[in-house]
Length: 198
Image (cartoon, rainbow, N blue to C red; front, side, top):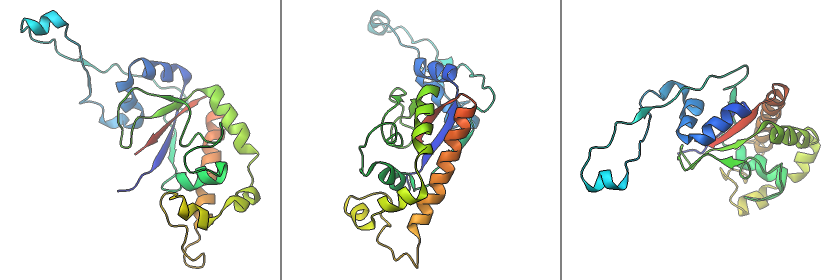
């Protein structure tokens, strides 16, 4: 099963609502599949002790999305390789360029595929955009080290392939360009982002 990193644009207002009620994240990452999701209602200790039936769960409140919200993209399986090129690290690195695998604010403990999602507010995304705007193709090319990437287990572990058969750098570069464009669009609309691994 593949691990695909997905990015979705979301306003700071919507981010605050999702952080207050984490189950709302399904309205963001799977907006067409939320009819079955309920917010559980907690039952008090004495109600449970005396066998009182729990109240029915409440339907998920609806989020109202504005211009540009829910705009999304995915980095296919290139996300970990891009993270390595940006940070020189497998799972660490300095902010804001480590944002694909670290940082932001986790949304509750709802597992959406490979753990909870993380959100970055609009100001954080502006910082990410500023850092990404300085990253050139030539810089990324100097950071592309297939032997080290293979040793570090950078997903999806395809880096030892012959470049004549499989140009893995071009694969990463194509998705990096898509990432830069997506982040730039989010900033132009003053939006934050949701990062999820699905």
